Image (cartoon, rainbow, N blue to C red):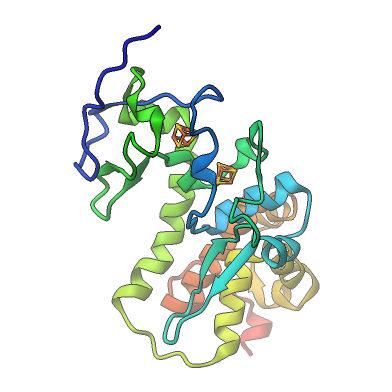
Length: 250
Ligand code: SF4
Ligand code: SF4
């Protein structure tokens, strides 16, 4: 039997990427899948793209079936939460064998048992009484844990998302047109509807978009999401990421 040693880091103690913590989770832990019940999981636009793709459904269907959307006054972008089952409060994707969407699980599930604060430091969000994996003696360097869990592409996309949400938090924009909030939500979270908007409306008659980029956004949700981020930055913050076609300008 492996001798367990106490976890080195206490809950809430901040860690740099170079620091270490002890953790091992597998189906042998008595608490297996307990962390997939009654949890608040905030979804980013990239989480939604990955999940709807692995489930083989449209972004609209995903939003309808699996999310709770919380809008607040004066907040242009609502919070999108993964909806737990009404009856048992379990995540809709948890099974006895574990996570059924493991390869495409959202960012918070990849990070667990860690989270990151506003300064980019890491901390444990649970303790060994609830997450027994923290009492097991497998040592992880924080940076290696993030790479192993596939967090890095998520961080890259979340940084792009943050380049929209960050300025919105610091500067209050004087926007009270609900159609703008709807457009924003579509470009961020309802990627399939946004694709229809780009290709089935007069969008491409109005904006100059390179042919190679048009081809990319036709084929890739990821490229389309990046395109949507740019379009929002152009529309909301006036960043010169698009140019209006001469004819449309007239
Ligand atoms: S609570 Fe911790 S050890 Fe238990 S299943 Fe979840 S991550 Fe693994
Ligand atoms: S998505 Fe997977 S890992 Fe995350 S809570 Fe649901 S079942 Fe658990």
